[in-house]
Amino acid sequence: MTALPQDATLAFLATLIRAGSLVFGGGHVVLPLLREAFVAPGWVSDDAFLAGYGAAQAVPGPLFTFAAYLGAVVRPPPNGLMGAAIGLIGIFLPGVLILIGTLPFWDTFRKRAGAQAMMRGVNAAVVGLLGAALYNPVWTSSVKTPGDFGIALVGFVLLMIWRAPPLLVVVLSALGGVALGLASQ
Image 1 (cartoon, rainbow, N blue to C red):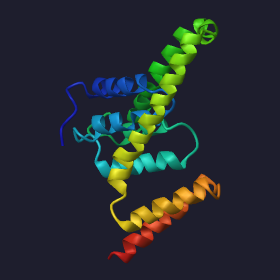
Image 2 (image 1 turned 90 degrees about the vertical axis):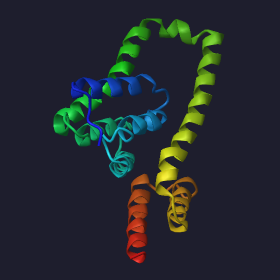
Image 3 (image 1 turned 45 degrees about the vertical axis):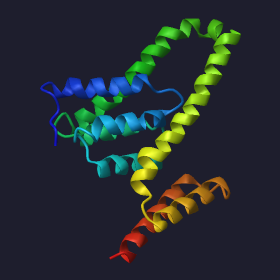
Image 4 (image 1 turned 135 degrees about the horizontal axis):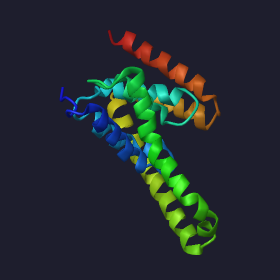
């Protein structure tokens, strides 16, 4: 496991500020960036990363709660409650600063045709980034067998066609994963 640089708190905070500055349209777009920043150097295991992502999906609120989770489990320190607080500050700080800086000009900016076209283009790019984040790391790391694919397919049908509550889908998917695990033993 690669250790954080000498000033671990600053390195951890800088990583999350970089990720937070690239968010547009939701936290999922930085998922691959966060995975590369935390899993590749060994700060967090791939299993812990995916477990935290799954847990963040199961609770209401923004995906940025995932930054608090990463801060709590990152190795070596800062971690725990202090790491979670640093994680939240780091991921939210760029967006808050951008909001404060652009708010006085936003009404004028959004009325311009060029600005509207630019925002439509950025929104289209975000859809592509969300698809990429779904495929890697989520799909490539968790759908490895036909049974895994079946659970994903049932979850998709429950959410999109039958409009089942997300919490119900998470619970049923978890139970399906446990059943698959027990069946493979």
